[in-house]
Length: 485
Image 1 (cartoon, rainbow, N blue to C red):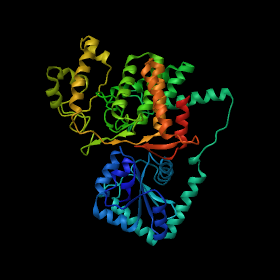
Image 2 (image 1 turned 120 degrees about the horizontal axis):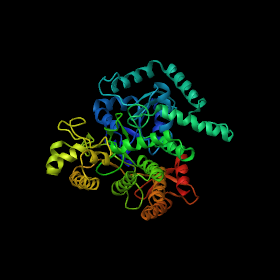
Image 3 (image 1 turned 120 degrees about the vertical axis):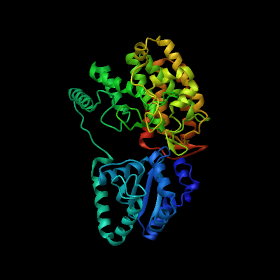
Image 4 (image 1 turned 45 degrees about the vertical axis):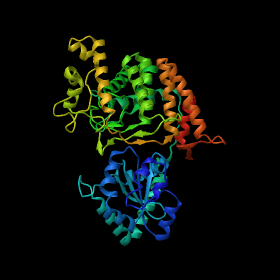
C-alpha cells in the first residue's frame, strides 16, 4: 500500500497489510470527499504492544481488510510524527468514551469531523468490547442509514471540543502568597493520590509520572517539606528495584501493569528515560545516594548502547516485543539462570526473586523488593563483595541476552525528545561532575542544529537518514529552549 514510501518505522510496519492504508495527506482526504466515504484514522507508534496485536489480528486479515477497503478511506498515523493529530483525535475519543489509549481508532466524516472511536478492538467479541468487524459493519450501516444524525453528532462533538479548554487555557496571575498556597495544595493533592507502600501515584497501571516526582523534590528543596521528599524518593526507589527498570542493561520501560512495578509493558521510550535521568540527577543532588548515581550512569549507558545513531542523534524507542512475544528479550526461566550462573545462581535468584514456576506468565522478570545493602545485611554478606558478585552474574546474563533476537527499533530522531535528553545530560553533569556528559550535551546539540535547524531559524520535527521533515511543534521548541538554558 501507499505506506511503503514513508520513513516512519510505525507506518512501514503496516506497509504490507492488505488494508489500503494512506498516510495523512491531501490524497486520502480528497478521495474521501470524492467518494463520499467515512474516514478511518488509526493512530499508534512503533513500540506499542497492543498496536502490534491489533495489526496481527485484524489488519493482516484479508476478509477484514476487504471490508475496510470497500467502505472506508483508511489512514495510518504515527502519533510521534504527528502529535497534533494524535492530540486532536485522542481528545475526541476521550470525550466520546471517557477513556483513551493506543491503538487509537477514530471514524471521521469526509470533512474530517469525528463521530465514533475507541482503542483496541479484538477480532471476536471479548472483554465487553465489540469485535472490530462488528464495529466496521455498525459504522457502515449507520453511516448509510443515519447519515444526517451522524453528521449532526459530529458537528456537536467538534463544537464541544472547540469550546472546551482542551486546546488551550488561561490562568490568572496572583500574588506570591497565593502562589505558595497553590504549591501547598498541589503537594497535598499529590500526596493524597500517592501509594505509600510502593511509590508512584494511583493504582495500576502505573506510569513513572516524573513531573510529579520532580515537583515533590523541588517542594522539599524550597520549603523543606519532608513528606514530599519521602514520597518522591520512595517512588524512585521502588521503580529502580522493580521490573520496570532493566536490572541487567539499564533503562526504564514505559509503565508497569501492576502496583509493585514488577511487570512492565516492555517498550523503552527515549523521553521516559531522559526525564528519569533528569529527576534522578536532582534526587542525587539532594541526597548523594550512590544508587541514584549508578542508575543514572546505567541508563545513559543503555541509551548510548541501544539508541545512539552514528551521526549523533538518539532514536525514539525499543519495541516491547521480539519474535512476536511481549518481553521475550528481557525474561528468563530459572533453568536458564541456573545453567549460566552455576553455584552463584541460588543467591542471584534469591535477590532478584526468580521462581521455579516464574513470577510473570511462567517466566521471570528480574526485580527485588529491597535495596542491596539491606539484603546483604540480612544474609550476613559483605556489601561490596555481594554487589561485585551480582554485577558479575549480571554481565554473564547480559552476554547471553545479547545473543537473542532483539526488539524492534524505532529509528526516527525527534527534536523534542532529543532536546529532553540534552537537558538530561546537562543535569547528569551538574549532579555527577562527569565531563563526558557535558561534552556529549555539547556535541549532541551541534547534531540537532546541523540536521534539524533551517536557514530561517525554524526547526524540523523529525529526522531520519539525511532527511528532516515536518515543522516542529510547540513542545519541540519548549524542550529545545529548556535544553539551551
